[in-house]
Length: 189
Length: 205
Image (cartoon, rainbow over all chains, first blue to last red; front, top):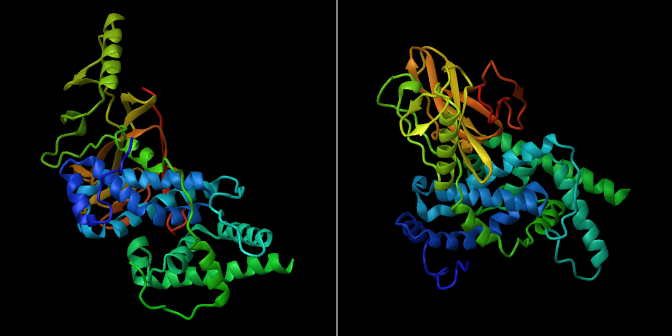
């Protein structure tokens, strides 16, 4: 199925695409998938630590968003609305995973792109970073990613997560401390 | 959604980490096609509590959407049941189901889609003197508005959901406050209060 061919991805606003979907043009939803897949896929991969888990959560979030599209009060801000659904899915998936034995599997896809002057060292650093990130508590990892990778403000994070600003600041602080500790241990050891 | 101003001075070490994590990731090239295909797949059937009446749930009409294959499977099961003299089955509206006495957690298989059974899971919560109770959990993405419960008699709140077999974490939202079900096991959550855990299985009592 070719989904985006001929669809004016760049020209239609989110609100226009949402309106088309709600009017019955379900194929137009592919525009939104294409538009937000990369940005939020990155968050899911970082949050869950594997491409497979991330794709599953991302797909689930897109399906849920599609089925709830009529509830999107501000279609022009489909992205943030979708992100909230995705964050919930990642949280649920992360909680389930945390109960299983944690076995970190290096994700060569998520870590692709090693290059520069010292590719071996660079790749090793990325693997250690991914490993350290997955060793954070779920709520700390979520707060760190939202703050430092997605560049959200604390108010936006509070809206997204339903957690108070003070608690979020504490989670970010603790995440930073733990990452520093874990990565310094690696570098020092 | 982007932060306009850095809200705190950034540590160079943390910034180095963040820069690394901002690198793009590569997803399956067929991801978009998979999503669009998934949109057409059957999933949880939306059932809403009857807000117009206070009749017991078992007396209310239910509208259940099933795929043609599932409908044929249900019809075949029904014919088979009749053929072997299962005259005890009682009809409910258009879909034949094995109805059971009203009790918390009763499970009613209603359809089979892509090999996974869907069962109707009834949730009952007893609380007098409250204005609203809703169900929030993994099955509705913890959406506080998605699954309101209905007070079917004084202090008895109910809602039924069609769910795939599996284990679900959930809470009751009682006048805006999260509570667990005292009759079910709990699991700690990463977000403070524990969750109740219910196991939905396609068994018939």
